[in-house]
Length: 120
Ligand code: 5GP
Ligand code: ZN
Image (tube, rainbow, N blue to C red):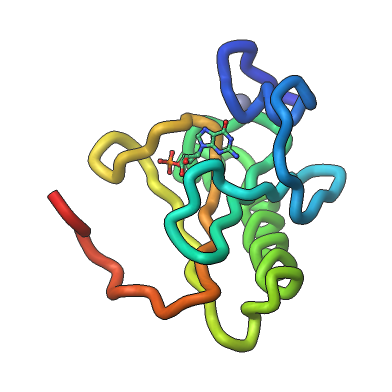
């Protein structure tokens, strides 16, 4: 499994930084965002390091599908599958990606605003 020693999320996968796990498989980990921006805000990451979702789509498309399957399971466990939720991934600088280990945000448990550039 690919890991990066200076990567925050690889450190979380290794168990060296505590996390609030919501769901886990052999290949995927889902845990609560430390700065929640919705009533439910969970990050879903592959355990194997990839920098961005775009890179991962090229390198390992099956793992991309696993992320979205896990996002649905997170929504089930959060009780928001029926009420609705948002799955988003920031890719690169303009999107504001802070952690360069692939992750999708699963947001819900409230009405969400329209998708867009947000506040500047
Ligand atoms: P990005 O901006 O890269 O799309 O999202 C990175 C997310 O990781 C942010 O929403 C941020 O709050 C979250 N985050 C940063 N450091 C930690 C941490 O140590 N633990 C957890 N659970 N989330 C973190
Ligand atoms: Zn990593």
